[in-house]
Image (cartoon, rainbow, N blue to C red; front, side, top):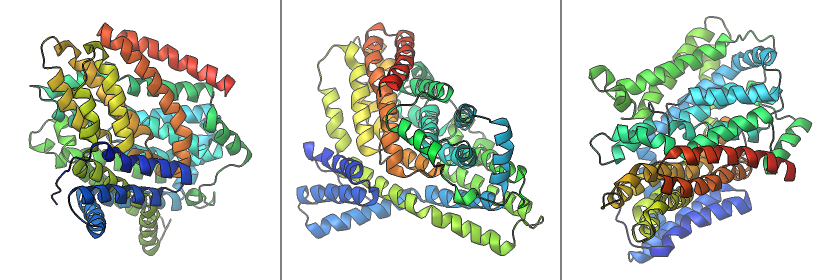
Length: 494
């Protein structure tokens, strides 16, 4: 479906601002996103000579287009949650919880284990969120780790890990945006300059090891100690017959087959390189992996009579019904992002400030980090953000004397894009992290935002140093020291 963009100027930033402010104030994300969506199509309709009816029709056209564009993602999520419920009903989650509890004796060990698992699943951020949440949620509940804390750890080891993993769908997406002979090598060069991703990983491990929480997260952790959350899906009779393998094997099959599925869909077995293959259509490959997980569960559970064939089908349907509320949020988020990018030019308006600035070139990483962060937070998409900004950065740095600033500025652009994706209420990664942890979405946003923003502020400071030093190591060392200092100081003062 084709849409024609209009020049909305400063009005283009109103829809995402309206949606975000309403979501934070009302604590109700569905109506907030819908109102933001409608405000965007109203602006588009009036500027293009349409009517109120046209605005509503355009909103639903955009929803239809985004559902079609993301059909594989919808199918994947439905199948994945079928696997989640099957594993839970088999007693596998409860058995794994009992097994892990014998080895993970403290909140610290569970938090570290969750962080490590998040890093190990680096192929795709959405897959990371749901898989890590499924595996670690029962353990977190037993050890009284709040759902908010679990959601933060999941989210902080999703997009920030994927954006610096050479073998991931993100790497190929970034490389494809760089107009260079070898975009993949350019991406590899940006990794040390992606300060937000690296410092976020440092922060999540520091907090997991020390337990020094602060702000809303500290209150959530204190509340969890007093009243532990209950995962109804995984609450099973200890004598139900489920074993650890009933959780581990379907998840392992899902992971392995998802990677093989992405490689197959992208043409790896027909001669395409692995890194290019997994980025061709990752959600199609993930869907094959989720289906393989369902088949594995059938072979594993039915012969042992952990459930009947009728119960097997019912559990899959229950899993699909559980994903409907977060799926509605995703559809509305995709639609709002589509209106901002395709109809009213939110990204074009914000990025115009960059191309029109005449500051010294050393400020480029700092400026691009701020602009990318604002864009990504407003639109809820990192891919859309760096997709618009990377061509601008390459044009700016193609001028005389600016070539040396290309890699640091690209790294800062990717870092700012990931910040917005990490903490925006309308980001699909944020939504999937709260879904994987079974945490109320707005509560996840409220408790995570201070942590993510502190790292972002530190990154902004470090990019002022990096832009003039033209080396990542000075800014990175400064950033690590500031992150650790911030954790200790804020824990004592807040």
